[in-house]
Length: 347
Image 1 (tube, one colour):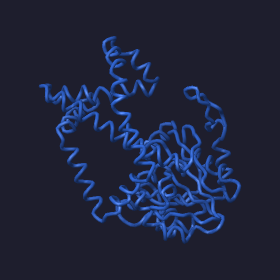
Image 2 (cartoon, one colour):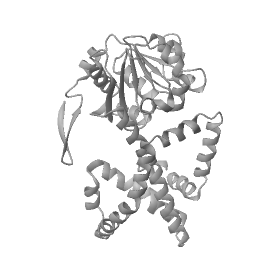
Image 3 (cartoon, rainbow, N blue to C red):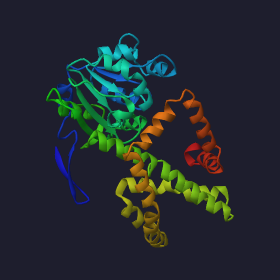
Image 4 (cartoon, rainbow, N blue to C red):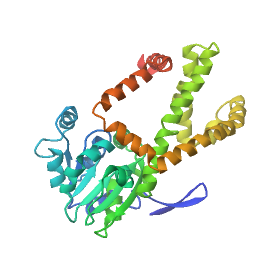
């Protein structure tokens, strides 16, 4: 483990330099890792673990996603099973179903969590809000978490590029006395860039806040507000989209990701620098009360309950598709589709 300075706060982090892949293989050499669910996180984590030499099987019900697993090289009856069979065979049972899917499958999964096994999560949702999900692990198993800070697609893509996606990790229940060691080994196995310690509660609360805030909800709201103001004042769809989305995603954010916000500022015009420095505090002051309201809504479980109620409806997918279609059909994102077609790489 290494101590790193994060803006003046010292945190302990773990990378493959401190915890090698060889050590991870040694720690988990007797384990059968059963990845339950092959949707968002399943393919990336299962594929990376398999490529890194771990013993992995997948549990997935029949359907389109099952067929995708077969196409990815998982063999029915050998490395691909029903959810129940995989949970039975696995010594580390990885709950990578959707949050609603985990609630629905819990009675089946719990039956196979016999003494000495390990229950693994990539999100603290089910455990942290157990009073709402009904997910209470048996007392005689380890319960651990590694949460990639990005999509399963990014985890897999970055792994294939020789890079790693940062992950948090936590131990909820340590019966074996080896839970943290297994957690770190798992994180290195899925290709973490670096691992930082958290708790199930902090991971769940920060994750829901981030998704509703700067990662997705707030940024979409900001995009819409700026685009609509530009359009209302006579700017063309192409101009409004480029100044709102395209320049951010294609030019500026890569600079922030590479060197930080100050470096990006330093590589913009002096006019842009001055205006951004003046207006950033105004946006912060305007938005912070909304983020505080959001955080309270997450912390008290309201957002979790909304998700459970919504995602458990039998017509959830149909309703979601309608909402996403409505977003796709907004002028801003229709303009975006045209702009993407005009990028040089599409010539």
